[in-house]
Structures are given as structure tokens and as C-alpha cells.
Length: 114
Length: 111
Image (cartoon, rainbow over all chains, first blue to last red; front, side, top):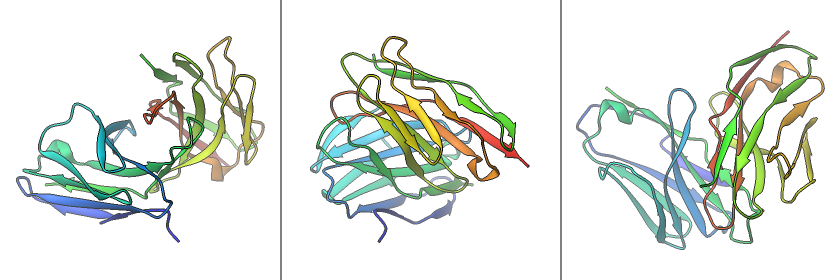
């Protein structure tokens, strides 16, 4: 029973293409996140949704568009892929019980843009 | 604003050595503090947490104490194993939904 799952695990594509990454959590959490991890392991928050509403929208190119069809799913669509988009993208979720709630991460999607 | 400053790596230790990874934070109010671990090829997973001053989080032989007076949450382990080789992230959660992560510290333990 995977708590936070992402598909695909690997994604290799050409520059200029459009691609999507999907995330699902079965923990009943209200809040979901997208992070980008670069080759130096630095983790950068991109977006967060709470109950399908966008609550965190960091400085990210508008080629990146998140969509949350329901609170268990958060997808990331990327238009016109660039070489610099190559990274590992992590989805995460957390509950709303309070600040002591931790985040649960998915296994990551390794994106390589050629 | 809220932030976490974490000891730079990489760190290389021999098996059974003592480990300390420093973490200090800046935050208003009373945040919760976390250590996450990322094994090669995997996502981050919670290692331990502390939710108020003087709390000690512990798991798998790792410990960290929430020190409000020094705004620190250093990670320690008395005797590391090869299987502890991973990247370690310090994080804080103030009120609200945002988490703030440190830059990560890569640990390699050699036999």
C-alpha cells in the first residue's frame, strides 16, 4: 500500500515537448506539494494545494502548471521542456492536524530532457 | 523569514564513528523541527522530529534535541553503519502548510 505514488518513475524526452507527471496519495491528507530536486540534492518547493486550492506558488516558470482534480491527486504539467528542467520531481502530502504533522514523499520522477 | 541552515557536506566517516550534522534555524513562533533521510534513488522519509523546545527526537540510533536558546537541532549518532549512507535534510514547519528544508548533507560511511 503505497502512501504517495508518482508516475512515471523515469521520463526521458526531447526539448520542446510537453509532459505530465501524476501524483496520488491514499493517506486522506488535505495538502499536497511539488518539489524539484537538482543534481546537488537541493530541494525547492514549487507548488502546494490544500483541498484543491493553490496555496503556495513559488517563482517557477509559467511553463509549469499544477492541477488538482481532487484532494488525493496533484498533477504537474510542463510545457515546452528545456534542458534545465532535468531534475527529480517529488510529490509530497501532509495532514492538517497541526504544525507537528510531517510530510510524506513519493519516490520521485526522474526527468531527463535531451 | 523562516529558514534552515545546514552543515555542508559531503561527510565521509568510517564505520562505528560518531556523527554530528549541524542544523540551525530562523523562525518566529514555535515551529516543529524534522530530520529527513534520502537513500540513493528514493524519496525523502522522516527520520525523527521534535515539536517543542527541549524535546528529543530519536529513531534508528539517531537523536536530535530541539534547542530554542541556540535555535539548533543537530543530528547525532553514536556509531554509524555503512547502511546509514544517505543524504540528510533538516526541516522546519512553522504554523501553516509550508515546510522549509536545508540544503542536505551527504553522508558516506566506509567499512
